Length: 155
Ligand SMILES: [Zn+2]
Image 1 (cartoon, rainbow, N blue to C red):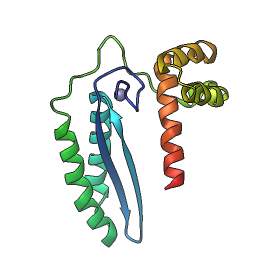
Image 2: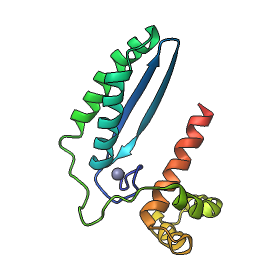
Image 3: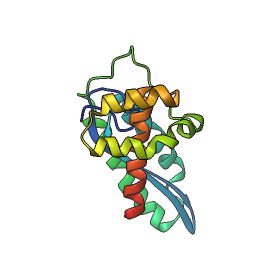
């Protein structure tokens, strides 16, 4: 994959899956983040998901076993990224803030229509970014985020 599915930058990526759990005795709140990510994004999800799970994951029976699975899984995925090259430091990571999402959202249908018709993602992203006052990376990251959401809703 040429683009990081989290930050939208052109960078070396690897497919990783990270899990987080917060146990609350009779309830639990878990989340998953997975995809082809660059080293920066992978590191960020690894550290935040793993530290939260390490301290808050254990409380509850299901949570206990979920945490026993999540922690080693996260560590294995993190180790797999050791050989991955870091993204170009001259292209800093730009977060997809709510304000940016609101500006890109009106172009969602156009974005997917043009990608489905076979236009290059770089061209479409650059073109929409100009009008949405965003960066092309943010448009690409937005496209992947919408894709993830649709996939999760189907599951
Ligand atoms: Zn990234």
